[in-house]
Length: 116
Length: 115
Image 1 (cartoon, rainbow over the protein chains, first blue to last red):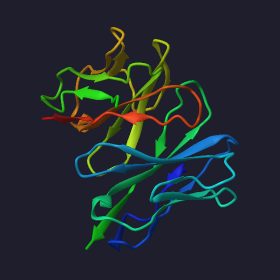
Image 2: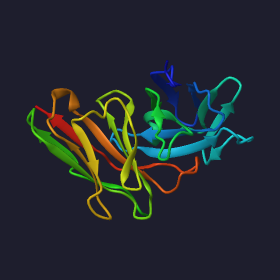
Image 3: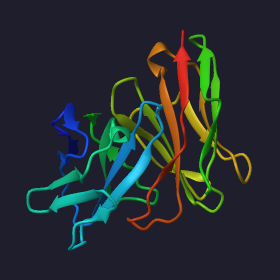
Image 4: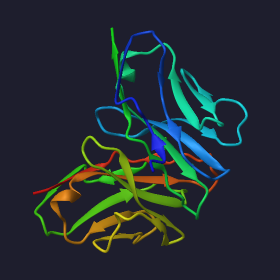
């Protein structure tokens, strides 16, 4: 079973509009973390935002916010006021508490295209 | 700002050859990782390394792969006998502490092309 599911292979948005990128996850752990990374066409992985499973408030980082709905196991990324530079692949990822150095599990990603 | 560096940025090799991908993690970080991303696909975990030993590895990380931290700064991934399907972008990442909120900082990646 997929641990991280991103159902939108591609999303299109106009500049200055808000966009929501979907992410659902599957875990039986009580303690876990959810991350979003951005991968522009140049290929690097850029950390955007983190949400802990015990955090009561939704995480926010500038124009990025995470709509965390624990009961539904969803962690959607909301980008407000989209900019052309937001065009990139976006990956949702999860870390479960396991052994030391526990790794990130990534979804398949969503390609966001922002047009003027 | 400190960053993870990787060399080379692009490596082309013949099938069956050995390759070593190099990474310099952020200096005070304790946890090190290798991931790979086949073109157009998701990022997949290979191996994590802590306290000079492998702490976790995925099914992908078979006997053809090995990791090493030969000195205090470098972290290497060796592929002993490359196959065509090893062609991918390989990312190194490092993290400071075990706490959940610590993000992993990724390097720029090495694109490996196996011919």
